[in-house]
Image (cartoon, rainbow, N blue to C red; front, top):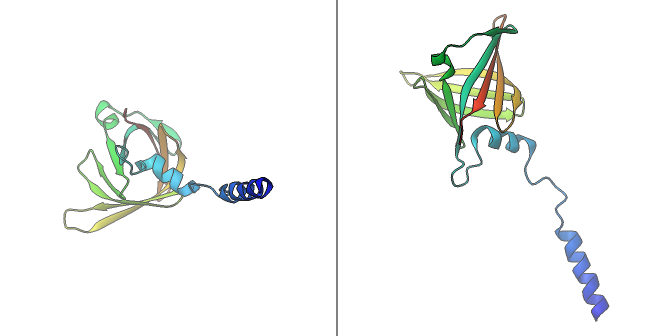
Length: 141
């Protein structure tokens, strides 16, 4: 009987071990960007830290450095310019944002995600032949 119990216990232990990722890479990136949606982690605020235009650093003044965007877990965002809209991350290298205009139409922007971790966020946007890299740092939480 003891041997049977040991075998059954071993089978349950082996079957109970999860061999799959608990969180996909895409969901992990979304959580870094916007929070996990749990308790006090429903949004992240990012401040513009620096900007490069075609690979050349652009000097930001104090007002430009105070620009921030708050990305909410529910797929919405607001920024310090008073704009709001929606965001989606179809994969770990792309970020799509739509901005609500005064007449309730939307302007769409697509970005390449160059870097995203718990303290910094970098996206690239190309307009015609001009490449903009926006470097953000997370607000002190």
